[in-house]
Length: 338
Ligand SMILES: Nc1nc2c(ncn2[C@@H]2O[C@H](COP(=O)(O)OP(=O)(O)O)[C@@H](O)[C@H]2O)c(=O)[nH]1
Ligand SMILES: [Mg+2]
Ligand SMILES: [Zn+2]
Image: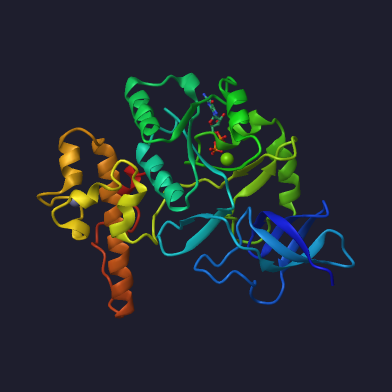
């Protein structure tokens, strides 16, 4: 059987829609139990993956995934409990973090988490402030200017009024961009504003295989009518749990903190949270670092350390007991991170 290559556009469970190089789209299961090339912790195909498939001889709309081709990058997240990895999109050119000034309220801490994921995947980040028709406060404007100073692109838009949509479309042209953001910020509305009907059209295709009890966590790649711009609509994220980053290396993913650690008295063992002689805290005191960004750093670091402790304890078969008044991932602090 002649092998063929293709791009995974969407999927759920073990069924994937693959845009094949012969121009046809095929629904593909997995050949055998495991996919060659997919042995990492994420253990799942992602939208944007390039795969080798075996077309079905009898059914032109079917095939089997045989192997995963090497990934350029992988953008993923962990589930609510932070214990299972979910591959969202692979081989992307841009992470487009969508936020809104209101409804839902502006959550810079969510942006900080997306920024860490983007930095860790070495993918550029664009912050889209949608719903700018609702008005943007001075405070929000200041924060956006801060992100720009860090080197992130910031774009104001309104899917409602059409403001900034043309410019956004130009910015995304020719690349694969993953839209990520809290539910309700307007990801789907933006995609529809960029090209009306795009989501509806693909919805028909995806209905075919969106059966079964598990809802998909995977992104869905949408091809604009220019034939070369891909947008990935990702499922709503309530909270982004970060895992898999060694706590002492987290600082590298905060552009304004990165490198400062060489000036800390305790060097690599400095946690940059309370130590005397900490260069990060000195910069914070001098007003060179936004206190909220430092707070994000501390929270994410605390979370990474806690998960490491948990993993170690689990390895020793020690049962971790949680404080009775606090369920995992549901505390007030966690809600603030959304
Ligand atoms: N005022 C205003 N509302 C918007 C805008 N974009 C989206 N919405 C509304 O926000 C809600 C959530 O939008 P949706 O695209 O479903 O968000 P998603 O969950 O991120 O995909 C809907 O009621 C939209 O009509 C905007 O630019 N301005
Ligand atoms: Mg949506
Ligand atoms: Zn320090």
